[in-house]
Image (cartoon, rainbow, N blue to C red; front, top):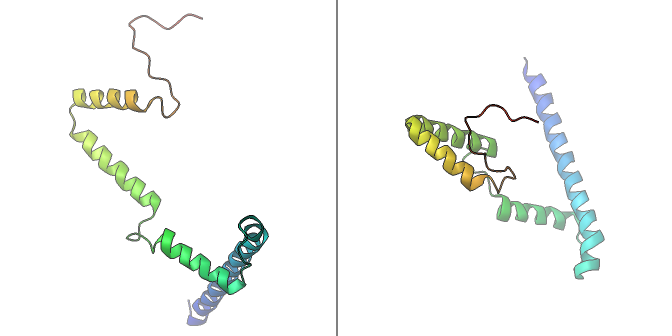
Length: 125
């Protein structure tokens, strides 16, 4: 690929990002100016004030990224770590851990606790 192809792609990306940001700021400004002055008696905001408010809220509440790993990557790392811990358990420890987790988490996730196992055949209807 030649240099002009990548330059065109970069210009299109910058334009799309600027357009997206302008639309996000405009929507936020419209919502603020429609709701907040009437409810809380605060002043109307201009476009640039809204942009500043969005940047400030990103700094205060969103951070600047945490090590470059998103939520999905952290979830996968946690799952991998739990699998490694479970592999280190003996079969008895594994079953004991599963039973403890079932008893602790069954109600909070909306699942009823697992019924006690019986040696009888399938239930008749």
